[in-house]
Every structure is written in structure tokens, then in C-alpha cells.
Amino acid sequence: MTREEILKAIKKYFDIRELVCPDVFKQFGEMAWMFFTTEALHTLLILRADILKVPLVCNNWSSGGQLTQRGLRCNLCELIKSKTLAGKLAMSAHHNGFAFDLTSPKMTAEEMRQRIRDNWRKLPYQIRIESGVSWLHFDCYYDRKNDEMIRFFKA
Image 1: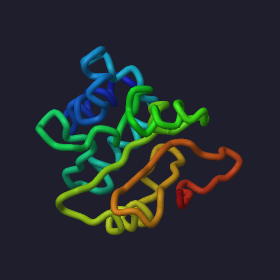
Image 2: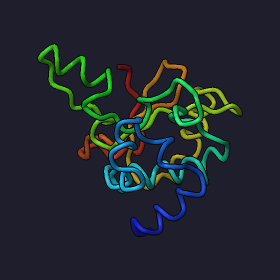
Image 3: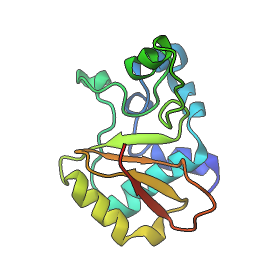
């Protein structure tokens, strides 16, 4: 799929406000799609439409919820800002448009991880998945020297 086809398809499932922090949306609006890598967007689309097939929640700030930093994080987001102020390097996959943290009202995070394991052949790119957390974190930061489609890690 081309990037344009991916964007058209993913917009059936996600509004940009669900994927970016409030500051990014305030400044860039719909243009904020440009900050995500094609690999991350394509993988998100395949996970939602072809593998998990359930509603997914990333950020919910635009509908009155408290979730603001589970998609794209900018330098004003507390998780990045606190590292910067402490003089620590911040190279988060979230900060660079490669990652999403997701939950679903229809499945637990472990059920989602298992379904992805069972359907790994549908993945368009290699991914990393965080283990042992109550949400599904996936990112497209991956060691290309390894040919496994999924690498599980603990933060």
C-alpha cells in the first residue's frame, strides 16, 4: 500500500486527535499525520483491521479523557519534557512517530499480544511489543539484523 492508501484506510478507524498529544493537534491539526512513519501507520492499520479486529483506544483527551501521551509525544509532553529537563536523552519511539500504546474494551492487552503472535504473518513490518504491561505497546524500532517479525521486550 502507498502512504496515501494507508492514510485513507486508517482514517476509518482513527481520528488524528486519538493519535497525537493536544499540543501537536493544537499547532498542526490534520497536518499532524505527517509526523508518523509509514511503517507505524501501516502496522497500526493492519493490527486494527486485519489482526485484532476490535475497537482500539490510544489517546482520549479530545473526548474528555485523561490519555494524552499514548501516541505521538512532543517535547512539551511530561514524559519527554521531564527527561529533557533532567539532562537525559529522549529517543522514544513515541517521540519519533514509531509507536502507539493501545487498549481495547473488547480484549485484554495479553489477549491482543497473543492474537498478534498467532497472526504474525499478516504484519507488514517487523515490530517490538512490550511485555508485562496492561496495554499493548508496539513500535517499529527494530534491529533489522534479526529476521523475527516480533521481538518482545520489557521496559
